[in-house]
Amino acid sequence: MRSYGQYCGLARSLEIVGDRWNLLIVRQLLIAPARYRDLIDGLPGIATNLLADRLRDLEAAGVVERQLAGQGSVVEYALTPWGAELRQPIESLLRWSTPLMVRGPDGDSFRPEWLTLAVPALLDTRVKVRTSATIGLEIGDTPFQLRATRSGFEVGPHDGRDLDATVRADPAYVLGLAAGALTLSDARALGLVEIDGDESVVRTVFAA
Image 1 (tube, rainbow, N blue to C red):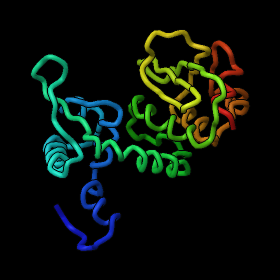
Image 2 (tube, one colour; image 1 turned 180 degrees about the horizontal axis):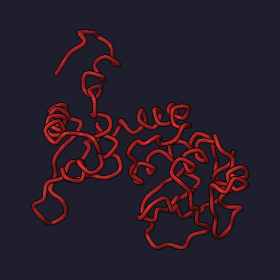
Image 3 (cartoon, rainbow, N blue to C red; image 1 turned 90 degrees about the horizontal axis):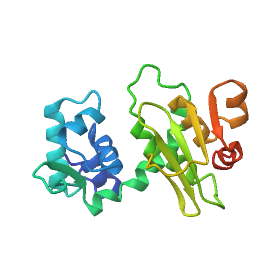
Image 4 (cartoon, helix red, strand yellow; image 1 turned 120 degrees about the horizontal axis):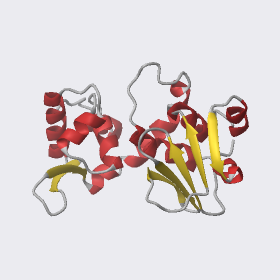
């Protein structure tokens, strides 16, 4: 592992997570523990040998650990408790990235599960929810749900519970709504978003 040779917390942190792909591996494991092939699928563009090297380095540093999945013998990777503490700085970077996301995907790869981190990170510092709500998000083949409670926001696969409303939109517009860079009124007027159910709930959650 390369060293900056500086007695500084930022320098020592970057020695562990500053290499290319490391924080994106952490992103995937913040979403859920994952098998090696799941990480390959969730990290489009990474070479298999490079992923193996990065996982080995992160494991040696105490950020990642291997565990057995369920009752079987399949190995999956997970964050250690210390590694999971990277959630807060990663959420801060997601909020900081808002100006970089305005131009849209521009041909870049996208996985719907990435929104499970980005949307709560963007909403948590902007919107205060007074009542609980569940909104469906149709942004791809897998239906997601956005849960809003007094304690914050959570996005994950739809678990079958009743939805107050459902939002259909391209991922870029969902991010724009969550960041407050796009108002729901403008998105509706431009035909960028479709809503089924209680629109007032959607307006409360995606408050501009």
